[in-house]
Image (cartoon, rainbow, N blue to C red; front, top):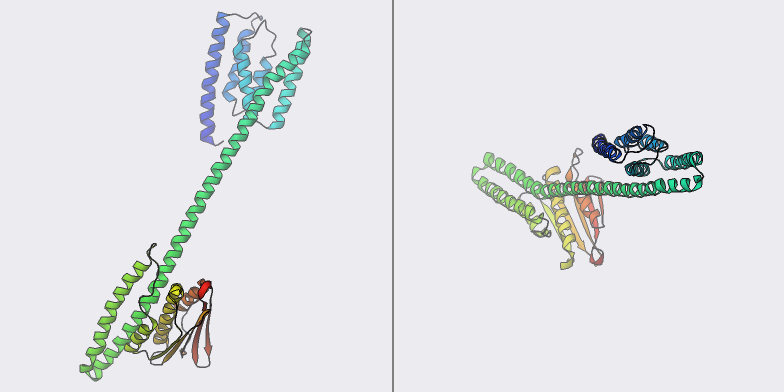
Length: 366
């Protein structure tokens, strides 16, 4: 019970105690109880502890029950109601062993008082036990149900937190996917633009008349880049399936046009059901051409794509850079694409060349 709930419960129980005190005093005024002036003491002692029945259930029940042992010529009905409420709170908010001990002590005390007052001690003890045992058991049931409700509420909060974490993870994965797609598309095109701009600068110095061709190529590449960015954003929409906009032959042609000498060999033909693998092959070939133009400019690159009935193999080879390239998204993205489709990725240096080999299953496995 937190502090706010404790204060709210205390105020409610204090108001309840005031109501019972006033009602018991009114009842005693209308139907006086002979008890040598102890009736008022009984009323106050038995009812006032109601104010602490949930914050101090053991002490409140003990005090109210003790005043029930005062020998009077009759007892207000409200006094027994108070005892029932106190023992109910004891069962709901107290410890089980404490409740058992207090019920046992109550039975023993009523038996002793009954023996002193008359011959019906066993009957009085049994009746007294039943009066307090029933509310204690009812309180235990309420405590059990309350515990179940709290556990259910905690589970609901945990599930909500887990859902929020899953949503955050999904957003992070989507951001990573968008970043990878933009890297694959825009990085490739910007590499082509950089190579064409270098060619245009050389042409302007040597033969200005020949600069128009690379400048025009830059213009076409820039417009194509904008179109491909729009395509990527459309492809990344949740309801739109990914698809390759250009075949690898077109990628090879555009790379040669931009000054990246390359040789493409493709054997076999992908089936229409291989769309995810075809897209991955497209992106991997694009990245291989981009890396070759970026890290080994002026050197030819060879790309071979072999479609087999059960798998596809991509092998790209270009001159190794003179200095170790800073690892970026390219190789990581190719590895991620291959492994996502159940394939493998290898990037290795073989003598003076750098090779990339990717294998991915096709057919039913894809």
